[in-house]
Amino acid sequence: MRYDLNSARELAIRACVAAGASKAVASSLAEATVAAECSGRSSVGFAHLPDYLEGFLCGRIAGTEEPEICFPAPALIQVDAKGGIAQLGFDRAFEELQTRARAYGVTVLALKNSYTAGELGYYVRRLAREGLVAMAATNGSALMAAGQSSEAVYGTNPLAFAVPVDNRAPLVIDQASSATAFVNIRQAAERGEGIHKGWAIDGKGQETMDLREAIQGALLAFGGMRGANIALMVEILAAGTTGANWSLDAPSFEEGSHSPGVGLFIVALTPELLAPGFSARMASQIERLSSKGIYIPGSSHVEDEIDLPSSLVATLEEYCQH
Image: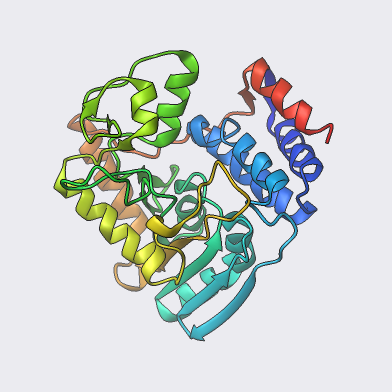
């Protein structure tokens, strides 16, 4: 079914409010959900929204909490989501993050006690549109094994990075430390498809291409130990420095009544203070790389309308009846 962006936002807001979210929470989440669709990341767009709706209904997400913000140092912003969503905490700190990044050259936002952050590129893309270079890291409930362990010890632990570019959409890199995102495994299971070798292990620690065994097992890091090292780095930034739950200690984002309580770490830098004309230089370099056949991530997918599966729309409408 085809929706214009405003209608899509309204559908998301209606479903969130019906599930117990405040209007502020619903609006922040709806905006991020539509943005994920517009950036071509539908797996963490409307397809991911039912996870939030179930979270509101079952108590995994505090649907009416207002985040608490403090400033431990001039260039540090600390946000306690209080079991709510990271998107609202980011929205509440967004103007201050920009202001302080421009005043001090660089500012860090450390957010804790939230549900999973959704599309990580959303946060850095918004900052890049304001002329800032941004990097973000977030952890989640343990889904990925590392090294010789068959136990899940990290979330998919993605990193995202974005920079402003003259006369085009920001360059955005958003990728998990795991060989694939968990939502891809789950969607493949729903469609009855197989998975690729190297994506997951079963409960005994053996590589598997069987979806049922993969869901009972754990994801694998991309690139072996290199990917696992990046996952550990993300874990330290997103959980260690923010005071959030380590992935090993984070309750499930799918089951139970307790928040995962995970973290989001963002650093924003004003590039023009170091390299005047940065955005123009980026545009020139991207053009040069593109001429050599290099793929440049983050090209805009924004359209006036988005397509949603009718079955998903029916599911969302059912939540609207709560």
